[in-house]
Length: 459
Image 1 (tube, rainbow, N blue to C red):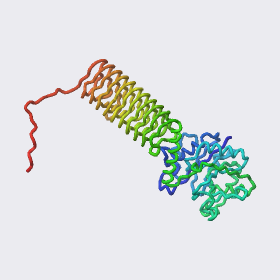
Image 2: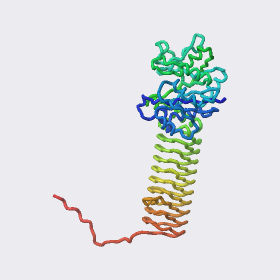
Image 3: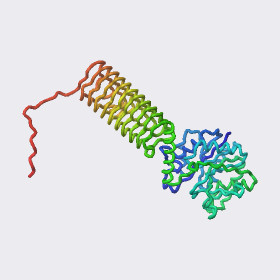
């Protein structure tokens, strides 16, 4: 089934009290609009049109390169007017149009797929998604006849006291024949409290025209919850977080305290991995099986192999870590870091844009940047690769089985050969040949008979 998709993302979100467009507010590191786009991603689409308004350039910039088309609603005249703004971009299309609000990040692919399928099977010109809420305040109500047929959809601001008691609400998701849609929108009038062109009024138009209107009720009422305030944003994030954590635990991952664990939807984690409290695992992350992710760890857009130990308070961004590696505590792995199998990155170590070879160790208190470290290398405490000369970054190469003494300064560009050793406290400015020892220190001087005299009291 092919459909055209219109996503309504023009609202400012006044109750958010923000200059950022409402749909770009982030949930678990992603904009709420991106979740809506994901929900429709499995449909066979003719075209997806995002209707923008407030902050249009920001929305376009964030969605650049995703193959979307954009319509602009300059004047906020209601949801019906917003859909009509997309008409030119769908001028050559004949078929069903799926309309979704961009501020409903909990909606799932399964719900959208089921909704569009049931619309097609019903042979209706219009289907709306509905659900039942215990507290329906703020949503349009679906009024039905005694036989259960839809009579109308009424916005809360226009509802009578009796209509406000209805618990079945309009979820704001529509699937509608394109020819009927444009005809209905042209016949809307703003005779309501807001003086706006309401999209739900196309339901009244269909009924009055003798057309069949289908309501598809979903039992997953939380999926249609809209976000209009910061409090609702936080509540939705909690639901998304719980949804992801539960799926991971069902798949064999141990999460010690789900309430304090933040894992984004795209993250993949293998069985028997243990996640400790206050871990943040965000973006395009893959973590293998049998790993241990310690407390207060931040991992973003990184690949972690199998049986990896990430100790307390580590920060890892855009890095790749192979199997049987231990990291931390208090380690910082910056972008373009690659750590090969059985290596060790210890406490208070920072690695930046470097390759750490199989079985090599950077145990503690070191900075390794713009470096290539071979296999079986040991880097002593306090070692620094001096990679920046004030103008350009330079590379340090440490070949297999080299031993770097504590507090060595490696002034790049420089190479330490295979099996070579540097003495503790050396500043290495020249290449060290294979198998040799490099020591660079000033001569130690002793002054005999010297004693430190105590300071006299000012009194």
